[in-house]
Length: 423
Image (cartoon, rainbow, N blue to C red; front, top):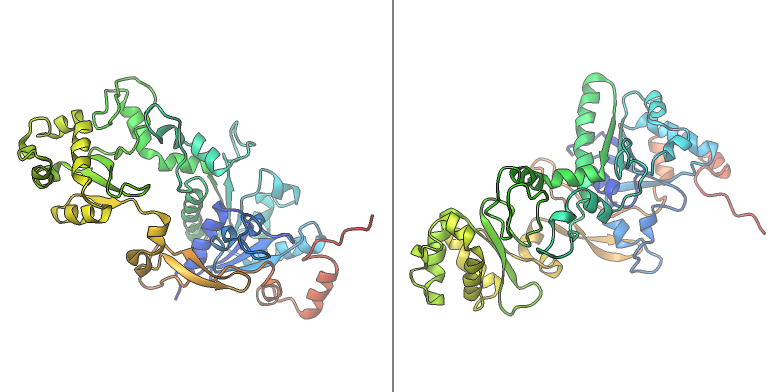
């Protein structure tokens, strides 16, 4: 039995942040009804790689959902929305500020229609504060949440990260909030409004940088590879530093291509074994007792030299060969995995993290799998829905409409945009 079997979600979200959340909940067994306008989620046509087929942008974020198209500009369409609110446990949206209110559906009205329903809302900067009306975007959230200022090489420009911490990261935060609110609604009979701002979510993921921001009021941070000092103010960009008390860095391996790197963490406990292994090969047999590296304090002061010596050792090995040398002596390390590496990796495939699916328009394609493994209710991943594929099914099975009512509502324009008038 699926973990969320019996939970029904009315999903009005689009693009990435909201669909990430609802897809995870669908993979855990919730019945997610994707509520689309007659034109559909904009990502169906964005970055399209197969003509006349839903894009990978859409298909990879909307698995296991049912799609219904509704024209909210018609009275009949609004009635469908109201009827679905009464049948759902959660409603989700990530429209711009005030969009639902203009349709006549503020949170207060939704709560009146169904007092037990939980409403999830994603905003760029929240519904309160000076930034509330600003438009957000993945990289804008990274910029304003603290990620960009602390990412990049010293004395270089700030960088965004390739991980979608603004969009998908916010979706993860919303999923947690919705499940907590759902649990409370089951206990009290009252739903609530759950809001996650993209900026807030990024700040939460930058927690260790705010740790360091406060440490700088008391002294320097010796584990950083760049100079730091008391009251310097901002946490600096520090390249591939580990971000923790232990020293870490990416080491270039042969054949020295773009992704021929191994990330290594030199924990205090492993230094002696590591030094004994690499020392003879780089003609420093007493590296383990070298006073420049004998204590973690000395290694921090001389870390640039330490990384140079480790890089010299790594020149003779591929990233996988070096990993095979370091793992037996308990040195934490991992190869920089490219998208091609991951798409063909035995470990990834074995954990169902890159799953092949079939789509009636685009054919075979791959989706990233379910990262949350539930022992008693493993996820079964199914393809994304075609636009409006389940409209009739939802109207009948969820709302109990009969054929005559559905036909009449179709004629009234409840599920499609009205035809354009001739010029």
